[in-house]
Image 1 (cartoon, rainbow, N blue to C red):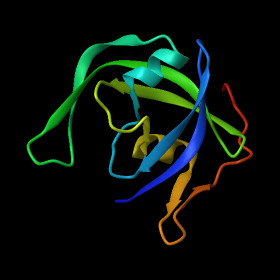
Image 2: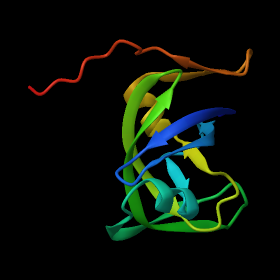
Image 3: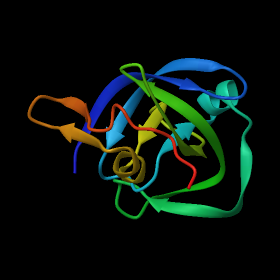
Length: 125
């Protein structure tokens, strides 16, 4: 597991912001702070809450809502769902499911995010 931080741009139905994202291979899903979520997109209630263990033993957090946004890394557009959490210390966490979906890898030796799918094409089959 590893973490790398990088500035990215989030673009949603309500606007856009530049945030510091933590790319965290130990996080199952991607998360956004409530403050950032409200700035960029319509926050939607989840069908049922989702609970997650944290790095602190015995502590959990619960997501009750989510947003769907585009995000840009080095000018390349990606999109995903971000679960909204109250009281996050980070603005945005890009988790393993998003990284796997878009071929984003972490180069821990050089502390950088590696984009393996820069020239993807959107398809409807």
